[in-house]
Amino acid sequence: MDPDGRRQPDVTRSRRERVAGRVRASAARVRGRGGRAGRLRLSQLEVALVISVQAGLAAALAWAIGHNVLGNPAPIFAPSAAVGTIVAALGQRAHRTIELLVGVGLGIATTDFLLSFLGTGFWQTGFVVGCAIFATLVLFGRSGAAVGQAGGTAVLLAALSPAQQDLEWPRIVEAMVGGVVGLVVVAVLVPLNPMRILDRDAAPIYQCLARQLREVCAALGTRDQQRAVRALDALRAMGPDLERMHQALSGAEEVVSLAPARWLRRQDVERFARASQHVERVIEHGRGVARRAAMALQYDEPIPAELPASVGRLADAVELLRREHRAGRPTKRTHQAVRDAVYQAGRARARGVDEFGDAVVTQLRTAASDLLRATGCDPTTANQVVREAEQHGEESLRPGGGSPE
Image (cartoon, rainbow, N blue to C red):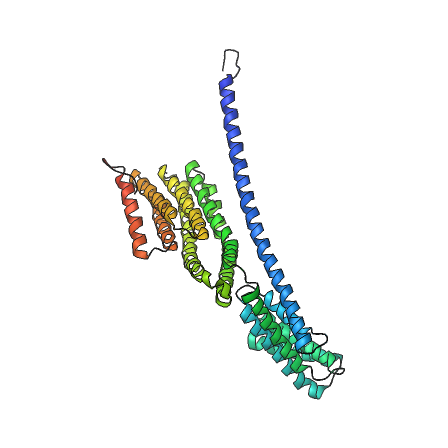
């Protein structure tokens, strides 16, 4: 302040620069999230487009076979079965085809048996459909495909039997043709790229894990206990994303098993499957890091600067793992980020942490080991790398100490 009580210009300018810097940083984060969301949306649209093309092609081929080969002037069952196979959840298409055929068979058997002595009519139709669905549910549980086909077949046979005879075998044959055509389309003619399927559903998991680890890093740096709690809540809410990733993995495994054009991707899918198991463990350990960090802040424990730095570097390693796996590159940068994270954790422990701060270091070490195993390291090597990195961090604060390798 000058003698008149006015604020000096350089002080005002400094405050404005800090505010402008925060605004620019916030805008950069928003742009980054928007770009990631746009890329994810584009990937989803690509998969939806391929499935739409598969369904249209399968329906057309099944109709042509039913009309020109089977001699049905109005084939309905074959295209319906083909589309039912295509739109089934990824990883369940072969199973869905079997369910379609089982449902058709149960519907025919139930309807033939009951109509033979009940006759036809409105109440007979309702009774037959109810019995067909009941039998399917009792035998196969809540299988939507089998139940739907059993009920639909019972309706068609009960309604059309008085006007048209011998519908049973055409119905079975067309259902088989449609199911086979659907499998041929997804396996041979227009197979999905399995790695696109996996990247689409794995991206939110890696992004959320890295983002929440950065939130924990910021919470430790600013001593904001509620921020760490919010990060913990977000990590606990990842169940639906993990379920979608499991379904995507099942779909990718189905594609590389059925589609000859995708057999070369089998090793990539297997590597992703192994990595996903360890990434799920990293998520569990990330929850532990957030929980212990919140407790350390609640009890006002000392937080050395290296502790938030180690959590932030672990977030870097998560992002690098996804990039290097998606590009098919060696995971050298991921390894280095993991070593850096544990090195900083070792320095934090050497500077002095209390009970919950020490628990953060321990949990971070375990997460680092699992992250290394996600890159393909065996357990012994991963644990050795983590142990050595922490030792180097602790020794770096002693006279003559060094830096991480």
